[in-house]
Image 1 (cartoon, rainbow, N blue to C red):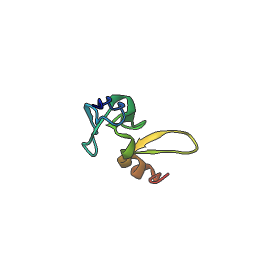
Image 2 (tube, one colour):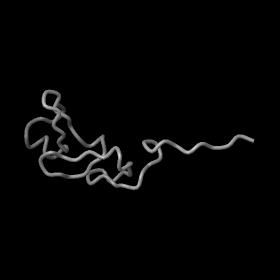
Image 3 (cartoon, rainbow, N blue to C red):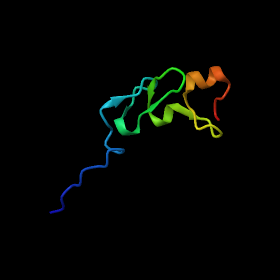
Image 4 (cartoon, rainbow, N blue to C red):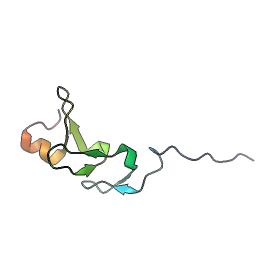
Length: 68
């Protein structure tokens, strides 16, 4: 009989909840906004390609960097 392997932390769902979309994610994959320090999952942030600055979608829209 085959045994089940434990899922890697990035696939297991996690114990943290994103402040924006409320989906669970692993603490290790959490991103924090440079402007408001909001904890978010990797899907709810925008990363500036030039500076590497991480902004939540709300702060990115205010800064005019949405989709950057």
